Length: 329
Ligand code: AQP
Image 1 (tube, protein in one colour):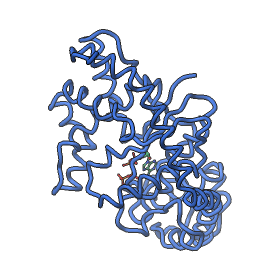
Image 2 (spheres, protein in one colour; image 1 turned 180 degrees about the vertical axis):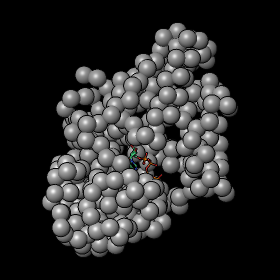
Image 3 (cartoon, rainbow, N blue to C red; image 1 turned 180 degrees about the horizontal axis):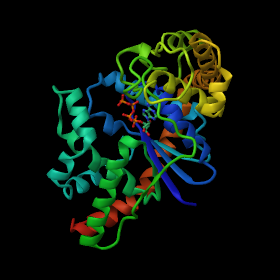
């Protein structure tokens, strides 16, 4: 089986965007690929979060993956910092990344504009750590959103450079573009993406939101004054709701337009809200159940850490040898 690797940061409860754009798909590919999924807590250190909260959110993210249907019998799930190979490989990657190429990363530019008071070196070298994450496992594919394609290109560049300088070590990963992926936008500003760290709770649907909250948030979602349900560039709010509805129900844009022909946005928003509430209910219930059993979560984490470390250490040791680190005997 081909290897797929992906991670998610413990920066808050997953949003409907994380779910429809990434995690739901992670579940469906588990049989076809050998899947490695990790909670990217080292990456999350690039932004400030209260330490107790970071710990809590890491446990929560782990449980959320399980609640979303990632099956520990099929997939390897682990916390990034539980496998020390990531930090070590990250340093090797740092030392073969150039200042110029890292400076061109659009995500770095965006994130430093967003947090001008904390433009730390980790934020700058984030793509190098990410390259190490991928290369450690000799991943064939990495599911990437549009905002991550530049990072994947960078990873391939580094791998090529490394292989060239030190002999073939790393497999060059390719992007994996899911058949049913959706880019979900903020409900309050449909031109920017829905993000877990958004401070306006009305803008995002958390996958743990209760039904009345979900319905209310969709009711107050920004639309336009045309009162016609159709997918068009100049109607970002309505188009976003249609994207969500389509991703959840499997209906096409044309079918959705036909369904709401002659009806107002009120009916449309209620239907979208209801479909999302129905989709998320079982996840919320499973999550509540999992959080009751901390010992089970911790044992899965330990097992994941052990397996991930065993796999990654092989590549790391090889890379350390090749760059000329004197390995202890
Ligand atoms: N709005 C979105 N629509 C579709 N996919 C999305 N993803 C994130 N937002 C959307 C996908 O979710 C995966 C995990 O993301 P991440 O936690 O690594 O970081 P992110 O992309 O920065 O996600 P957030 O929610 O926006 O987090 P914060 O607020 O912390 O920055 C990725 O595969 C991503 O494409």
